[in-house]
Amino acid sequence: MTPSPAGLIITRCTVLTHDDHEGIGFAEDAAIVVRDGVVEAVISSAEAEELTATERIDAHGQIALPGLVNCHTHAPMVALRGVAEDLPTEEWFNDVVWPVESNLTEKDVESGARLACAEMIRGGVTCFADHYFSMDAVAAVVEECGIRAHLGEAYFSSQGPQGRERSLEFALRHRGGAGGRITTTLAPHAPYTVDDADLAATAELAREHGLPVHLHASENRDQAEASLARHGVTPIEVLRRTGLLDGDVLIAHGTGILDRDLPILRDASGRIAVASAPRGYLKFAWPTTTPVRALHDLGIPVGLATDGAASNNSLDVWESMALTALIQKSTTGDPRWLTARQALHHATLQSARAVGLGEVVGSIAPGRRADIILVDLTGPHTQPVHDLAATLVHSARSSDVRTTIVDGRVLMRDRELLTIDVPAVVRELEERMPALLDRSHGKRIQEYDT
Image 1 (cartoon, helix red, strand yellow):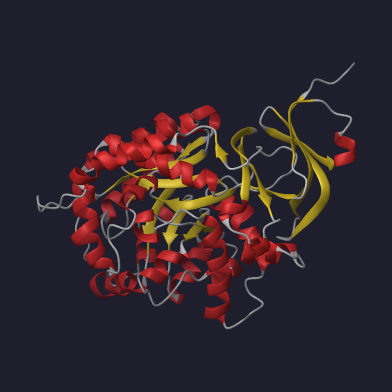
Image 2 (cartoon, rainbow, N blue to C red):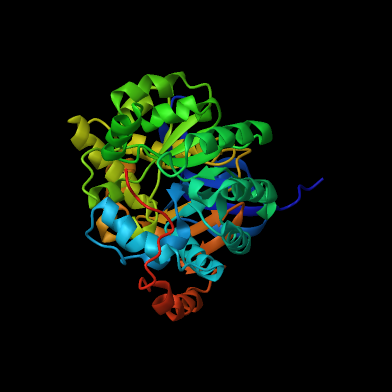
């Protein structure tokens, strides 16, 4: 009996592979067989010649990587890219971003999310973890454009119990949406904007409904020191005493994680992960960065992120990967940490684990969803190739991604986006800019005072 055709076969590429010891390798002249959105096999190109497929991609000379994961962002904030520049954190929030965000409509969120998804798909990001408002609109964009997402409706205690309830309702309504491409989370904003009672209630809801939690905590050293001065505990200790560390928690940033916090994170009974977005920390001139090495030594996955484009100006996870490697070398004083191979592991499997998808995506292997990107290294800035891992991390750019595939569906082919009309989205946002940027009303959605 002749086997049915595969859905997609990618041939004549070099495939990034993972072993069981956090190592990576490269299989040359390989082919990837995809059936029903799942990687069926990684075989030689010669073996693939005998197989039939509905769609074939000849990726000669290209590198096949697992799609990158943006472990913490606020996708709709691309609408505010460049609006608040060269400001300390408190002024950035209070004088610009939170006044402007009080103007946001659901249509603004939708348009911003659509532009953000276009940027991420073009940069090789196949999954993003988003923490924002009007998230029904973001979920609709994810459904439409074909990307994968881990979504949470953010809330503050100033919204009253309704904010927490909306976060739960969103998580339950959209869990498993977009054909399984959407996973969901509860999303309290941070310990400095959500009180202990709300955090404890969130922990209880997470246990009751089997949901993870995604929040900002110990974003910077000032927050940690302010929390100690006012309350006698660090933000991480707040997470412990409210029960959040008994469940699955994704902590955004963590550059203010102190030495006293490390045993707490190590001994937590839940699955703890941290998302690091180094470009924003440099822009804000924060004195410390995410303690990636210390967390790694505790077995806590650190995923790569960009944060929102209002602070980072970019949703380029490729840049986050390179910056993480370089900053870790500088802060530890050790050029052997992070290596390029370790950085690739952070960008792929470790980032997938951080958002709870380590058994679903993050590697190109049988049984994993077919979230794959093809990278062209023929440009002058990537030649010659002496060390493929180093070339990918330190020489390649997000613009070298030629093709982006999610669940076996091609979302970008040879740099052409297939599911999003970028000029139309840009026109929509430009029409909204005068009203969106108006700060004459004097309102803020929240107060930053840590």
